[in-house]
Structures are given as C-alpha cells and as structure tokens.
Length: 460
Image (cartoon, rainbow, N blue to C red):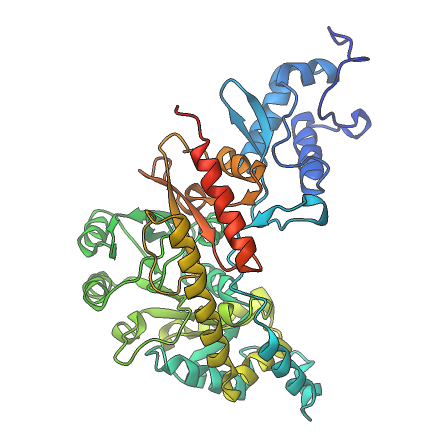
C-alpha cells in the first residue's frame, strides 16, 4: 500500500490505474504521451516527482524512472536540475485557439499568406478539360507534362536533366526519405554539417543511417575536413543545402562548391543536394548537380517556398540511381498527388511562380530589416532569408528547457539542439522564422519578446 495518503495531496498528473498494463513502465509512458499530445498537459507543466508518483501508484520507484526516461527519449519531457521534470513543447505543433497570443517563430512557413496567385492557379486547374485523368494511380513519376515543366524550371538553377531522370515527390522531406531508404544501406554513414536539417536527423535515425558531422566555417563545410573523415572511415554520401542552409543560413560560394565537389568526386560519394533557394539565382550560377551530375540527387526545395500546402517537389537524378530511387518513391507513396502537381505545374508555366517568389522576397527584405533593428548584433543569413539566428549564452544548452522558457514569454522558437547530432556542438542559438508571424506588427512583437526573454535570463 502507498506510504503516503494522497486524498488531499495534489499531483499535477496521474495515470488511470485501470489502464495500467504490463510492462507497467511502458503503459505509464504511453499514457503520459497520450495526455501530452492531446493537449491535456500543456508545455511547461511540472510533472510529479518520481517517488511521489510511484508511491501513489503503489509501484517500484524504478518503474516510474524508466517511464520518465522513455518519455525523455521521445522528446516529450525534460528535466531541470533542482527544479524537476517538465512537459516539453512538441516539435512542429502549431498554436491552438486556446494558446492566447502566443506567436510562432518556430516553423518556417514561408509567407503562406501570399496566396492570391496560388488560388488563381488552383481555379485554372479545376477548369481544365482533363481534370478527371488526375484522379488515378497512373504516372507514378508524375505526368509527362508535369515533369517537363519541372525540367524547364530546374534549368533556372543550373540543373540540366530530362523527363526520364526527373520525378515528382510529395515534398522535399519525402524526396530525402526516398533517397536515404533506397540509395543507402543499413549502417551507412552520411556526412553532414555540424548543424543540419532537423527532419534529416529524424529520418536517418529511422533508416538506421549514421550521420557524421563535418567541421565548417562561415562559408560552409570545409573540403579538407570532409576529405579527412572520408580517409579515416567509410562514408557513403553527403547531404548539403547550398543555398541558405537550414538552420545556419550559410550559402556556399562557387569556390567552396568546386573544392567540395572535388572531394566528393574523389571519394565517390552520393550527394543529396537540397536546394532551398527562395529566389531565382543570378546568371552564371552553378549548382552542385552541374559539377557532379553522375553522383547527385538534386531536390528542388524552392517548391516548398512557393506554397507549403502543396506537397510536391521535383528531383533530378542520374541513370545509376534511377531504378532504386523510383522504387523507393513507389513504395513510399505509390505516387505524388497529381492534383497538387498540376497546380504547381500551372504556377510554373503561367509565370505565376516567379511572381510569387518575387512578392515573398520583398516581404522577406522587410522582415529582415525589422529583425536587424531589434537584433543588430545577430549574424547575417544572406539577403532575403526566411529565417534568422540569434546566439544564446552557453548556459542555454538544453533545447527543451530553453524553448519552454521562451514559450512562457509568449513566443515559440527552435533551439539549435534540434539541428545537430552532437552532444556538445560548441555553440547555442535560436532559429527564428521571420516569415511565419502573419504580419509585420506581430513579427515586431514576437522579436521584442525574444529580446525581453534574453535580457531577463539569469546571470548563471
């Protein structure tokens, strides 16, 4: 029986005893996750001490410890020395109606309120005479005219492919997943930047692919560092975001691209090039694909910034990857939504795509000026970036605890710990989306809240 009486003693969370099954620790963890994901337990809620919960449930203390540890691994809770255990903010969770005036600078939505021409393109597609042909399982790569439009669009980014070596995927994340699962083997090593795309980290973990962080500088990954790790161990491939890399905002210059391409060519690496350019490149631009066409899977990430709600992107690949990659596409999706692909095709062919990017670029320039006025000391992320970074003091090294602190201050942010596999990456920062607030006034308010939280941080 419990040592203490809990009749008049408050516990912030208790699982239903009737729902506890064996193994007990797993049942507790699953019930806790259920209440967190449902919103019953809000981010920042302090959970009962493990001994008190164990006493209440009349179970062994170590059972509750195992349950809490499992929830930590699931990134649902976090511990703070001397304070207790708290509910973490869920990655990617959007504010609900009951979140008051919480402003989300976590997810990079890319000025999704710029949608007039997206709506016009959708209306044009619905009036086409062949709309019924889009409602079937044929053309798993995407219809020929859709791939042809993508091929012509990618030429603007120095990617010369053809319809037989281009396919449509359900967004960039889907293309990355297909590439990892079809071109790499269990236990393979993929070289990445010290800070890289957060969803790549999660997908690689699911695919049991090891990510190997490679040193870099303000111009991106160091070629000599990549060469060194390739000489010391077997590396199968490398993932790069050459334009405004997420989360650092670094863009590779031509000299750095050429040096990296030489190393990749020498070691025969598979290159996944996730191009997240938010604007058409200038004349003379060179993609990594143009330097390594036989080793590169090029993902046209610009599509995500045209309209995040259209889950479609194009990828170009060499003949040597064709069968494996398309098999991966089929097994993951069967096919990408033909309706989404048709709307995107209409945007590309009508010229509306360039107009949308130009309009968003103007908004991005204004948003960056607002950011620079509030954080003049912050590093530059390139002209027209959709996100910026703000350095954090060394003591702010715990992602979940830090994010909860800012959320309590009225703004949702993302900590640099989300973007690395290193336990001690050497620096901490916030990645702030300046394209998601919904208005310039809300952006000013959100950034001011970030500044206020930073200034109120304790000295130690």
